[in-house]
Image (cartoon, rainbow, N blue to C red; front, side):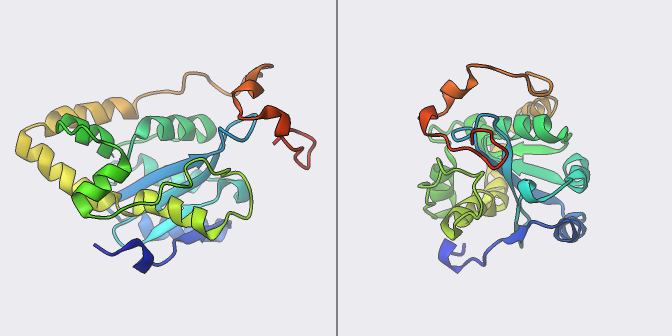
Length: 227
């Protein structure tokens, strides 16, 4: 398993042509790993700020803030022939459904798989270390993912959240099969794919800014809103 320092940088997708090229490259894959980064700690209205996608041979970082439409991604996410691998998928699925009304099929969640296998430490960094012998840098968990440009170190952190998921999927799939728990896991994954966001659309919450760390330090965005 390659050390993170030896892995090429992810392809940054910030133009419609790049998005179309990525979808063309990935539409025949049998498995894709997916993750998101949102700005819930730094903005009044949370939104998805990055979508990371990894195949077994390439990593991509999609910038939703730079793209007018993400419809092409929906075809990948809804395709039942492509297994979509997440870690702790509930939050990512809720955000993607809320912001883009995507639908998902053929899910696999490495955290849920680890729990069904009886593991006690099911965080991504623990699983990648225990199964693959790789130590992930988790120092960017609280980054402001809505800022641009993002530093190289933040982009590498985002990339590695999906880069190792295909191999981790294979290890956990084999363990689920060996323990006789695969059917139970599949039922749980299917249930997660059917979940819907708790609120349709975005309603105004006059006290919502209190959940942001240090709201008094918010700086105005170019359009005059706090950001």
